[in-house]
Image (cartoon, rainbow, N blue to C red; front, side, top):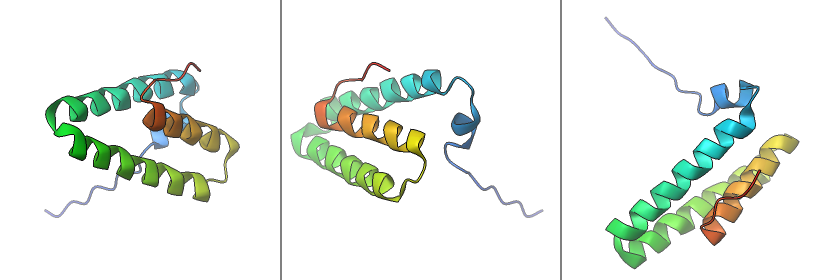
Length: 88
């Protein structure tokens, strides 16, 4: 049998009534991923990882029409620029 799976990233988080909690979890997860790259892949790869994430977030900000999504993308941008999780 043929099967196809389509993943709509972030859709369940977007519908979540407690979106702040989901965002807080995701922010800590992203920070953990940053620390993992910093520890295991060296300075150049860590820099490239952060740079690519920042570019991706900037593109998301530029195409965002929803005010809440814009706010959350700005928080992610601050996370990758500073390396610190942001209080919600």
